[in-house]
Length: 574
Image (cartoon, rainbow, N blue to C red; front, top):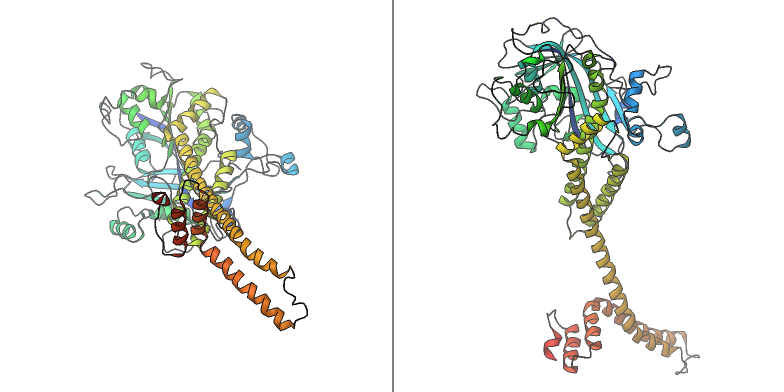
């Protein structure tokens, strides 16, 4: 199921940003930013079962702000829009089934059924106020969407938050892109502000009231948590947004527990429609494309040598003309895997049309490309973490631990197999631009290499378990062979009793029992001794059958069967 990202919200609150950009400074007429935060969900109860974490939110309906989303495909009586149709036909059939499932016929015959994606949304957060340390005035953005995506059979959830703003100075838009999506500070500045983070982030409701605020400046809380739990502490405003999901290592109670799976900087998408696109310098374009902090437009954020191949490596310029930035139809797509940026002119109606323009594609088709790419990476990282967790608990001297390890690896292999056939795509569309942008995302995320590394690790563990199982079976066969060979002696002895060589048929039952025990006890002792000595007896049989060994060497091997363990090489005594 895919959330219909076409509904809008009012977002002008008291104190909202109305500041006009300075003259001759590049300005952003329309700004959108979407952050995606993939997290790993911790398994509940029996880890051999398919986890359906979203069922906890369904069961708690009315008690949490999250509500299951019904879109145009599933809503009763809803009109199917042309915009949604264009989104649908962008994708190839297998990607359509992943994103939207199958319709009535698929439900009836049970072939694929509904989409494996389950979306929940919350509507209490409608704005965010951000205070940057170098900006005297806080900036208020609208929050158009707060969604939570779950995926069938994959212990991954993705939080999605979409911001929108208007008439922003370029530096303010750059600051928002660079500082907003931070799960926790990477360090602290001399002023006490969290490094690379906004000074303050506050979630607002429709009345402009603060629902939750960041705590990046509380350095000691982060240090204490990291020292005790060996993981970073999630900032309080992101904790609030995820509730009732709770961080796995926190003291909070919650059925659905998560932990970070990637870097603290959340992947983001940004759309910028500029009033004066001709004023952008190469330094501006690079800062936007790589999502760096604001800087002097006439300088580069990195060295010229490092940025020599920036355009060819990170930009998709099918609609960008060098030297003609003033052209109304100029637009550029930039992608480095972690970020996807679209810039164009606010004067171009094909760029700004909310139904059929690039902004609509950005919020729907391109969003889904970005979601699929980061879901694939998060799923592979989750599977890799499962393998590490399984092998870290392995104790080869403990049979129970070995069995648990085998079950865990087999279960992970089953999940990986289902992931490969249900979720792993190298291409999702045959439309040239969509196909090329998805290829660029995968290349920079290096998910192809990650997929191969994960597959090889699973195969290595499976081969290890198969070799251990084969070795165990071989040892059992050898022991049974030895027991059978030496058991022939007991068979012959007991067979004598059935040959009537001794006329004991008329003896009393007690006498017959005595004769039986006289044969049974030594035979049983011989069989048990043979099992105990099966390894050494196997070596003796090998030596006995070796025509190159002398009788002295063979006798020595036989004597070693009954003596202490030695490392005798019988060939030396030949």
